[in-house]
Image (cartoon, rainbow, N blue to C red; front, top):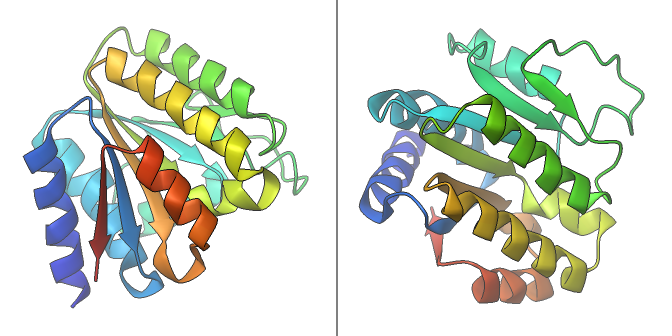
Amino acid sequence: MTEEAKEQAIAKMEETGPAVNVVLNINMESYFDVLTGLVDTFRKKNGLNCIYIASSVSASTISEALTSLDINTKDMQFVDCVSYGVMEALDGGENTTYVESQTMLENIVLKVEYVFKKLEGKPSLVILDSINSLAMSNSTNILSEFVQVLSTMIKSRSAYFVVLSVDEQLKPDLREMLALVSDQIVTIK
């Protein structure tokens, strides 16, 4: 069942192409399969760099989890919004940029733009993981503006943009906001 979810996510990304804001609404059971499909299979197949915005768990934790699945994360770029808040050691190396808090949404946009400049215009996949975590620290109105600004900047770079949301944790006001600011919402069962 979860392999099917992975294939659905990859097929949707290939169908939409770059410069489209896609929300992948997934369940917890298929979460890692979809994530590995994006950062491993889809990214490699299309020769993309990956900018991973970590707002639910720290960049080091997600990097270790992906590494344990034999996915090379050394060529990924992380924008970590968690480590400061949980007072985790900030030792992610050259491929990790830190934001002090999940409430500093403008800084997230600036850090992503900084990473794009480091990548020197190479084609990229940007993953925001997860919108549910950011919604715990920010109002829906502020989050809406953030997603619009981030999406516009990413689209201007002709990059792929994926917002991950966990279906079981998606509140009605957040679901409505995503419908307004996203190009496509895909529920993967």
